[in-house]
Amino acid sequence: MILKRKSDFIVLYHRSPYDESKDKLGKKKWIDQKSPNGIIPTLRNIFRDKVDGTWIAWREIKDIDNEEDEITRINKETSFDLIRIPLNKKEISSFYHVTSKESFWPILHTFPNYFDVNNADWKIFEEVNKRFATTACNQAAKSATIWIHDYNLWLAPFYIREIRPDIKIIFFHHTPFPASDVFGILPWRNQILESLLSCDVVGFHIPRYAENFARAASSLLGAKKDSKESVSKKFISVGSALSEPTFTPYLNYDGRKIKIIASPVGTSPDLIANLVKSKTVETQIQKIKEGTKKGRKLILSASRVDYTKGNEELLLAFERLLEKRKDLHGEIVLMMACVSATSGMKIYKETQRAIEEIVGRINGKFSLIDWVPIRLSTKRIPYEELVAWFTQADICWITPLRDGLNLVAKEYVAARKGKPGVLVLSEFTGASVMLNGAILTNPYSQNKMDASINEAISMSLEEQLERIEMMTSAVESFTVQDWAEEQIKSIDLYS
Image 1: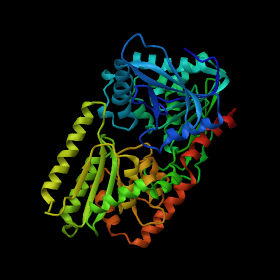
Image 2: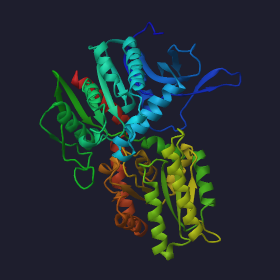
Image 3: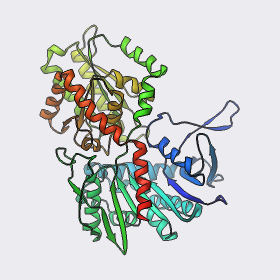
Image 4: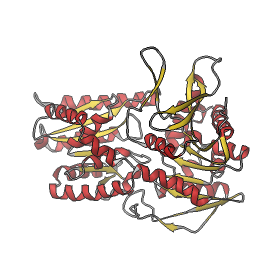
């Protein structure tokens, strides 16, 4: 089923803009996402000025009789049409959990040893992408703009361009894009690159990922690169492992000119500032204070259970810290919020088991009657509670082995505005090239990890305030709304 009214602006994103729920009478209703921050509210806000907009996501179906696209007119904070493409459990498992997460994810994050080509069902991945593309084309007005999100929909641009050459296509890549030799491991590399080069604009968080894509397109498909340009002043061009002083602004391929942009997703500093003052967060802050002995230094680490997140390396560094610094026993606490994966993937279960075993060993070795060094939570923490932890954490310790951006680092900075605090950040996160003032560390090096946490613990309040001020300036100068506007502006300028 397709709406009679065509859309000038369409978002393709596997996630729905609202969560589906039911009222007391069993009638379907739409509720906000559990986390009020992030890109979904921002994407919804774009539709405030686009009354003819459409968002295309998926929905899970259980029976074959319910296979039509579901169309809903959203009338909450804004008005737009939501079209949900029906996928059964097998299709979702194959397309998302297996092909995307087990085949693409390790390559994108430069963990080729986890890649297994035999896991992927490429035909199903092609079919799901084609269904997204076909629905979008049927719904699109003449010369409409379609904004596609992330690697799950890598092939959608090709199918859209094939069906509707009049459409303007933006693609934003939320994960890292690896070096061309690593990307080249994928047996479908040419098909993926051909599809991305069907876009008008391809966006990445940082110049390094954009340049990796340009190199892959050049070396694997022969795309011609325009002369390089200096990176924007919002990026740190030297110093981090992911720094890049220049990048390629355009690629030329098959008679087309494709714009490449580096545009990092921001956070919502104003929203966080308001939450910090809210009664809900104040209540959570009081609970944290009651559960933490006065004078103890609180370290916060927030991430997911994933082999890319460096949780085990962080825990081992904390263990070494306690072994070397007996003066810190009873004086420091690590709060590790490490959300369990829900996909049931074996590798994530093994990762969670390893994390729990290390935490158990450390707590068993060092705990005192009135002190347990690590608090571990594998449950999803409500966003308001996480903001409360940000306000109370003396140190935020974020050390993924690889991360496309890492919004937690930016959110911590926003919550600490005007207050002392220390951010220890892996230089393999995209955020590392924007947050001048963080203590950058190398999670692959024990010496670097040990030195960085010791520096954080001993840093003076004066230096903490100076660093927080520098990072706050960076966070506030490029918010999530700025990111969205830069993306949309890029297609307007291009056309």
